[in-house]
Length: 215
Length: 215
DNA sequence: CATTCATCCATGTGATCACAAACACAGCCT
DNA sequence: AGGCTGTGTTTGTGATCACATGGATGAATG
Image (cartoon, rainbow over the protein chains, first blue to last red):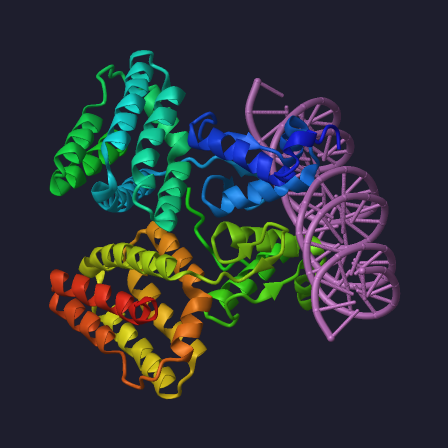
């Protein structure tokens, strides 16, 4: 062990590696199809192959990484059918999460969402794909946390994870500079307590971006 | 790319251990709160700690096992809120899966479902909890396979996995000897091509058993 | 010049080891 | 007698090693 970082010893090595890789994949830092090696991961994080392997296994189990028949790992290259299916899953789960969050959404939350949404708009105007994905997911997660449904939120995050590399490739080639219209619809529906409107807005927001790749 | 799933014979050690533990947990062979040790698992399957650890990590990532702060692993003891949430997830996912399977459900599938359903009824009459859970899940999986939605099915199976030990504890104390009424409703709706009826029947079947524990 | 084959290196897998933390149990002190 | 403490054992963690396999590179041949 090189430097255990005495202050942060509470998190195990494999947890640290797992978290780092996970956010990297979810935010689209890694392109689809890019290969990873256990020794390379270990070298980068200053650990041996053991924690690297456990992190990779965990990410493979969550669908964030693809394990070839020979054991090589890479980020997945999703087929169009798979992308459509994951988009449908997002719609299914996130509409429910938003609906459950609605009765608990007070002004403080809406203010917070509006603040995050400014970050989204800024990333869009800068053509910053990773920044866009990160702040967009933060917007959704902040809303869904109010649903008090941790298992459901975990499933939604697993879907985000699987879509991460693909979203990066998608939004990277995207030309639009328009601010997020559906996010404003979501906020408006939250303010009005309009549940059907909220469900529709979330469904549109989740499906719009991904549909144009698969279509 | 989705792995085509041929009859994979070259199963690595950790894969074999993982599969065995997974079905055990999903079928309710292990009681909630039961502790497991890496060396014990390794001893049982004739492998070292390494594959045992990877299997356990993977199952923890899927929510099938609970990892205490000190690293000890055990099957989870679910709170009532968590059980209700997982039941809601089952309803959400499985209603959608059944709906997608409906247009593809031909006579051969319905015959197969009826055959499986006889096994369910037999397990119920014998008070065989594990047999009931296994054949019940086989009924649902057989139907959902027709939906051609592997990611969605995988998520549903993950929920089954999380509920496995609890379902065992639930059905173990259940007194009913009635054959599965909702399964017959599902089959009837499939025959009639009645989508609303199918959605309702699946939702009832999924929620009925679990609601009486949490309620 | 293209194709094929052999060799070498990189990579994943599983076993083993050293170590630290947690648990269990016994003995001790009050 | 009851709570506390110290010790021995169990357990998880991470590193290292030996081995088999797969992919890549380069040479030899048609």
